[in-house]
Image (cartoon, rainbow, N blue to C red; front, side, top):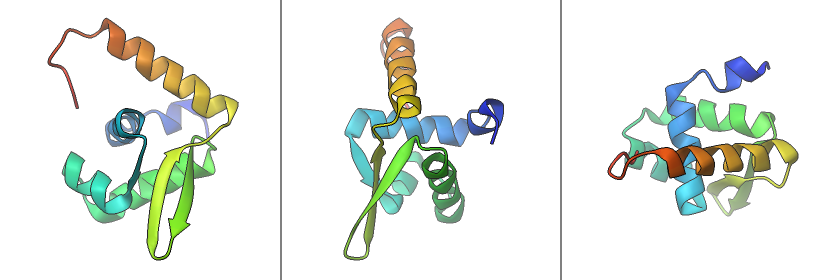
Length: 93
C-alpha cells in the first residue's frame, strides 16, 4: 500500500492519534471513543497493522492494538507529537 493510501483516511489518523495518547486500546474502545462503525474501525486497524505501524496483541478474546517498534511506527509517533505541539490548546480528537 502506498503512503498516500495509508494516511488518506481521516478515521485512520484519528485512530493513530488516540492510540498515541492512550498507549493501547481494543477495537471496541476505539469505536466507542471515536464514534466510528465497528467494522470500519476493525478494517482500519488491520490496514495499520499490515503496514507495520500498529501491532495486535491478543489476551483471550480481546485484541489490543498499540504502536509497533518498527521504523515506520516510530516515524508516525514523531510526526503526531510534532504536529500536536504546534496545535493551539483545545483541538483534541
